Structures are given as structure tokens and as C-alpha cells.
Length: 411
Image 1 (cartoon, one colour):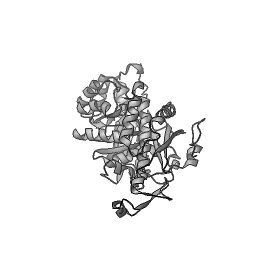
Image 2 (spheres, one colour):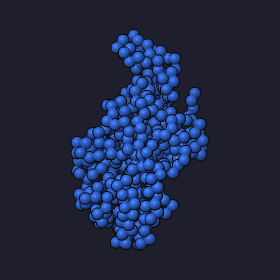
Image 3 (cartoon, one colour):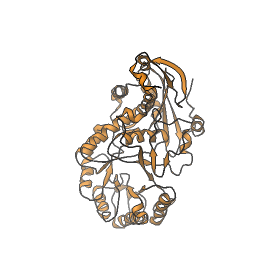
Image 4 (cartoon, helix red, strand yellow):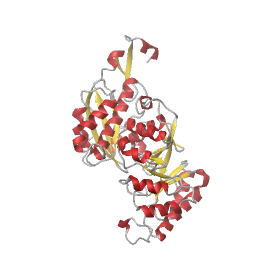
């Protein structure tokens, strides 16, 4: 398309389909925005997590791809949301988002599966709108600060409780796979537990977790940053003692050391230690993240884009965090679709620190899209193609569907 033609309201242009090839559909500039959503469909892919893929269809022939976090009842919820968006203009992303939240308010659309379902549609709207307007999705968020987003690799071993095995895997991921940012789990059995349900850490348990951190950080040295995840496993006192014990080590961050509900406890733990604390994966929308940010309850905020409310909601969270000079490390367990949605957010916000990648052991993760080499040397290059910039490979999607699922009805 000749962008100079945009100055001429009577100029014709050629729209693109989701693969980037021309469709031979010519319309005036005014008609270009006269687009309606005709259908919303979902499938669940059996990845290392159940990935709920969402497709928004339009009468312009443009299809937008999104993803919701994760599995479960999401297809049923999205089916309930469909009447609220069919017949609407996919370019009105903010209005449709608020409309869906309001329509689901009686069912608790401030958090949980309702917001995750809305997030999946919202990502698909960004993909569709970008294709209609012939711009990458980051442009819909205000443009980009960076051409690539740093990716951190969530690492696992056959024996995650073995400090030496963790160190070996850290070294392999850095030296062989090219990542300079890693994360390991600390909520692993130490062999010293008396009662894991009470959230209390005895000294031998803390010593075991410190040993994992020590071995990993010493092995990678200054070649990589290493974060450690607790998955909300510990009580306040134990979390404080663990964080204090880790202060001598080069910990990128300690993630979710306490359960997510009580932000006062989260603040108390964070303010008790020099070890950087990250949280936010289990908090929804800007309203849910607000207290973590404004009460200095985190050093790093960690929203999950296909879960927290979508791309624009994540950008709003980042804006609030930036007012308090906090970086954003996006949690992510998604397929390439949700990962690219998060990457576009990471490109468009000033305070993006890193984006998680959780599928490095899954050999076919990238097969779900037609594009290759999405992540190279621990970086994800932001596509310049319209929308999210990746194209679903429907054959690969069909090959990996959860049992009982059927592929999108393209008709």
C-alpha cells in the first residue's frame, strides 16, 4: 500500500489476509474501518500447558488470533462472551474490553477465568485490528521502545531438588542455548520437610534452597541473570528468613514467596530484605496490581498478559509501575500466540525487563506458527508484519489438539 494515499479519502488500497498475502479486496479509506466481527472460536492445544487459542473472524476476511490463560472452562466462557462482540468493530478494542467486563460483572469479572477469557479475545482483537490497519500490534499501544525483548528461560531438571543438577542445567542453557537470563523453582522438596502444608521452613530446608541458589549463580557467574520462583509456598516469617539468607548471592529476583491474597504481608516481606522480590502473576487487571505497586510491595511487577486482562491492560499496569520506577517482568507460559502478544507489550512499554519462556523442552512449540526462529540468543525480535506478526499453522494446531477438541471451523 502507498501510505501517501492515506491523505486521499477516495484512494483505494489492498487489504491483507492473515498470512500477509493480498486478498484483492479494494475499498475506500472510509470503508476500511467499516469492519464487523462475525464469529469467535476457540480450541485448546495440548502443550506443556493447555493453551486456549482464540480466533476472531471479520466480514473483511481478516482473522485475529489470540490466546487465553489457560484451558479449563475458558471455551465455554468465551462462547458466552461471543454475543457481546459479534457485529461490533474489532478496531474498538478498549470499548469492547470494557463492554465484556461489564457484561460479565455478575459472574465476577474482576479476576479469574472471566478475565482470562476476555484477555484471549482482547489479544485476538489486537491481531485483527493490526491486520485491518496494516500495522504491527505494538503500534496500537503507542509505538515501540525496543526492537527485541529479552527472554528468560524457565529451567527444569529431572531432579529439581538436586542443586548440582540445577547448576548443570543452568550452564547448559546459557552455553548451548544462548540465554543470558534464567529461572529455577525453589518450592521443591528438600527431604527435610515435616509438614509442607503449614508453609513453615525449617533451617535445613532454607539451607537446601540456598544451596540451589549458590550453585546456580556461581556456575553461570556474570554470563546470566538468575531468578528463583517460590510459587506462593511459604509463610511470612519463613519467606523473610529465606530472602535474608539469599542476600549474599546475585539473585535477579525471588518470585512469589508468599500467597498472593494478602498484599500487606507481601509488602512486609519485600520491605524486610535487600533481595529483589517479584509478584503479580496471580493478580488481575490494573485494579488488582495497584496495591502491589503503590504500597511498595514488590521490586518487580510480573503480570501475565493473556491472564491479567490483555495487552492494553498490561500496558496500563506498566504505566502505573513506571510512575514508581518499577520494572516489568512478564510471566508467560503461552504458545507462540500469547508469547508474541506479551512481546508486543514489552516492545511498547519503557520499563520492560524480560519475558518468560516456559517451553524450551517442548520440541514443537514453534511449529504452531509458520514463522521460524522466534527466539534467538535469548531475544525475541518484534515482528513488523501486521497484527501480532505470526501466522497459525492450522495443521500443527490440529495435530496437537487436546483430546475431544475440534479445529476451528474456517467456513
